[in-house]
Length: 322
Image 1 (cartoon, helix red, strand yellow):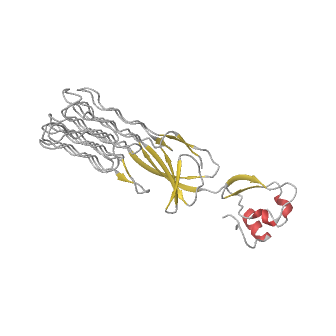
Image 2 (image 1 turned 90 degrees about the horizontal axis):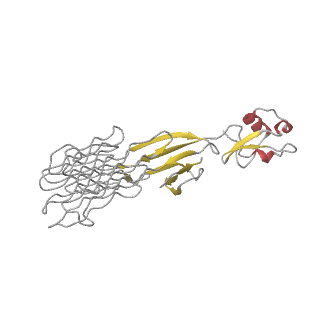
Image 3 (image 1 turned 120 degrees about the vertical axis):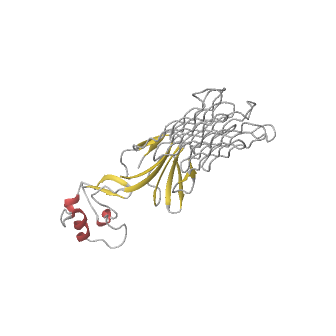
């Protein structure tokens, strides 16, 4: 434990901390650390008692907690398409030393929407931090192709297309959940970090699976909502945590929406129209968040202080420097 930062300090206190004796001359040129980092070195010529305030011979450490969410996938190409699955969601913690080596951050990009009939949504890009690299979201299935009607596996799986009743894509254990099955006409919802995507039926598309709430109070990695396949059907809603809603047309005529930026949410599925705004939607980009107790110690990303913690939000590639 470091010496006090103010008040009385004795040669006995210094000797207890550094174990170099009770002659101040013995401390000239000695390496030390403070809560602000180090290593630092005492003067080689003269030392005063107050030079020892807040010092210790041992490098201080602190614990960081972190969230890594990969990019969400896009919804499948028209028509009746399944929604994109959310990007994989993982958390961890480790101990770092002020002034120590930086930790690289990669933030996965959004998966593209399926552009034409029979083309599934694109997978989300992979985010990574300190050994965690969750899988990107699985793309939504597309109508009129025996293989591509099935949602892709991913961190969370994509929903399968409507018109054919087939199971959705598989999620990855510990990262997300399965996508929903397609219904008689309507697409399945994309899987989310906390729940599977809903199944489409003859009258409504599947809702996106819910995302998970992290330590900052925000939800991440919600699945996209499936696309409505007939004029009177209802689109699927996006899962909390950035999932985009599906599209519907004719009687209901509501466009879909993409996954939320830097949430890892899946994109909404297309309805039975390929008009602008009613086609499939892209997923949301991923995010990496680092937090620790107390005031700011590290650097990198966008820094926010809240509730006694410091948060570093990475919306793109970078480095967390402790």
